[in-house]
Image (cartoon, rainbow, N blue to C red; front, top):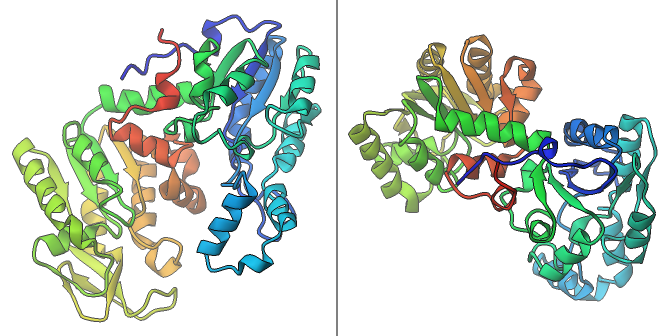
Length: 423
């Protein structure tokens, strides 16, 4: 796939109406107050928005938020599947579930950050949105309502895409966290408008794409997280590119069990043991170092204050479960990144949400902060860990899309990038 795409600087946007797809899927306080608890994704869109405004463009921004169910019948079905009594499910409650996922708080925060009023449309392609888009002048910003309020959004409905495109003259994609999905607002609209990337996507493509296409060597990939099944494609692709692959997190126990080790109550994907062994053999055949934990911190319960001990990998007692890499493994992994040219990290080394079992993740983050390597954090939990531990400013690049960066590293085509104009 060609990742050399035209950017917003390669097209004329002066005085034009621009449909800008952002990723404003921000976390909200759970008390229903609508307070945004982390505005990083809004801030990430500011350079592109400000550039468009400076060019005199009229910006029609759009984004999804959460997973609203766009029809009452479907909502009732989903709630019933969760065990709710259908008799208690009213249309009012469904409408409240939609209201809780309105982009109203985003419009307010974006107004504060830009220092200018951002108008929120009451719908996506309905009468309010189309009227406000038609009246929008250069230098003004309109935010459409949650794109997933439209049933056709996730189905990439061409009629919805056509209606969205009809509001503008240029389409700019800047929602890297959503480019792995072929939705109406992420890919469909590109069939009807000249489509280019914003600065956020441009950076993601240059940094991650560059690291995969022509890395400064040695290239070390650190893969953690809970499941082998979610990372098998990434491991398989990186075995063609990396010099060293480091395995941590819950998926390490599937590798251990595949090699005949005892894993106690640790996370284990029985069906993926053969794949794990295939990856070990492939690494040997390709001359890639595949580093697996040599010791592990085990606990007698999945709890922050559980009793713990360090045991050798493959020797976890019955009734105990692995929750972090052990001290010998920490040293092994930190040594492996010390002389790296490029490091890509996706997934924590243990249950970093519990301080007692965050030691491995902290040590790897600290080691990356001290290396002179290009350090790329692949979004998701690893990005959250680096932010929490205070090492974010020491990393070369922290991806804004967990799922998108994973599929990027897997070598998959990203529909929201493939649809953009080639340079």
